[in-house]
Image 1 (cartoon, helix red, strand yellow):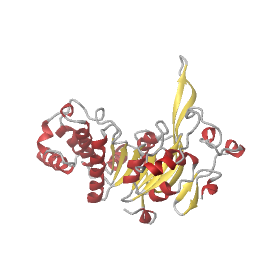
Image 2 (cartoon, one colour):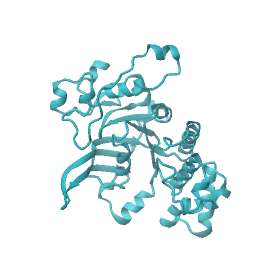
Image 3 (cartoon, helix red, strand yellow):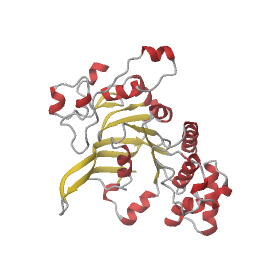
Image 4 (cartoon, one colour):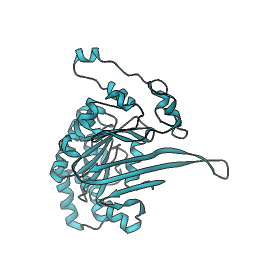
Length: 334
């Protein structure tokens, strides 16, 4: 999908002020003394048929956001509307039915597959659990799914340890496709793979998206790959989204100092341009999500921070059509 057409599409998923805090307990009586603010007021939407990239440093809350959207973690506050249904208030059978439409591809292809199950059992399990197929029908469906992800159907009787990392991730993709979902969260699906295999998996995801009109939330910290696959990109820092724009807009005109720092670290395949480019080196360490800074989360490392940044949290506002930034001084970068 071209970035220009993204904003005209209808929203499949809408996240409003999503909060996920993990309590910290201490002492013999397990008294709560604080909380890890992994996700602290995140809002965005994902258009039908698009790929929204979610990027940021390790530990900023990207994966927690994905798992909270699917209700693998029950949010502390906020709402998650999928096809205009608020998942936060669903329980039991109602939530189980909605989960058929939403799936996840996990980061680690070694840990996400049960070593005691064959490929046929792993890929066929969602079909059996949701009672959408039985017996021979499951076998036929598994073989078809393996063909879709470019694996030999005869591999169905093998175990995960007999496959490479790239092949295991394809098995994970086949499992995610089993229930014919409309929305898939890709939680850093290529970070554990060799560089030569990463492109193959990303190309496979793009082909499947086009074939089945899938919608992706693509979580990663490889900005080059995110630029390749995403229609829009959201930048996350310490539990909050600091910038959201179409891919071309964000990479051409980043308006948040953190986004500028991230993009300055992406290599350019042009020695002349690379030599002239000015790197933005951030000072200090990322603060603890258990004790984040007051006001703007990024102010302790921001070269442009002023007193107002410590006093209040910047509004996540629309600077130009489709370009949202949480920064008091975003206009100076226009």
